[in-house]
Image (cartoon, rainbow, N blue to C red; front, side, top):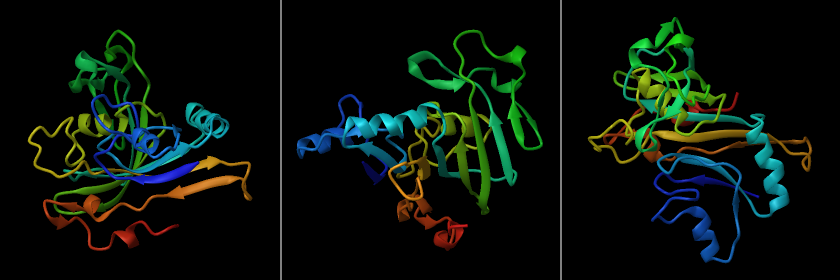
Length: 231
């Protein structure tokens, strides 16, 4: 298997009319099987298997939600609590766009938890979705978050944050001006069972690049290494 720190702007696999990591590997004679995916605009940790036996063992942990995932994000806002839970169902609307499966005005915030009443959930196919977050740092204009997607829906973190009024800096789904060089979302940590290791666990971290910490040409925080120091 390979654990790679993917730059923002390249797909893992499956993007139409675009070069992706699997195609680039194939061009070099290497067959890779994605264990999971992160969005093209997202940087950070991604796992790829080099044989199908390893692929199945790892993929099942993502399917069963036993793989622990953590992301970093920088929002274009302040005012979030120290810890929070976004418990909002998702649905897929027109043009395959992911959205909250309820009217925006029905979203309620009770201290540190965002929910909607069951009666407000729109009819159709909906997907229960939960994101937990911790605020790591706050500046005059931005908030740095560590996030755990309890469920693993497409665009989950991006949609959850945007719909509660705290969009990720540079997210093209919600920032139509396109003035930022990248989307400030990073796949930071993965923890999986690994019975071939002693101890039988795989605990991985991918360090964000300087481009993640720079917004509008200026660093968001002075010492990101200290902010992300291991517990």
